[in-house]
Image (tube, rainbow, N blue to C red; front, side, top):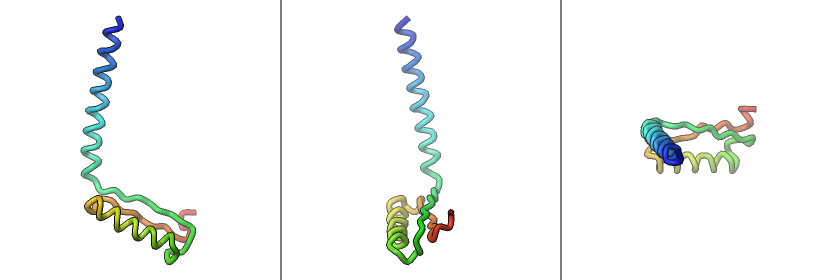
Length: 76
């Protein structure tokens, strides 16, 4: 009885790993956009840091990731 439970766990683990690999492969091909909101004007350190972060993120991801900035508490 213990062997059947171990076998089920093994196959469940393989199934989860395969689903994760398929999801990661399809997600890697998509462009991603992240939101960055802050309550200061874009000319402050927050905006400057967001610009630097966006440029570095684009460079490291090969242009597949970027951020949209929402300065001045635009999102509430």
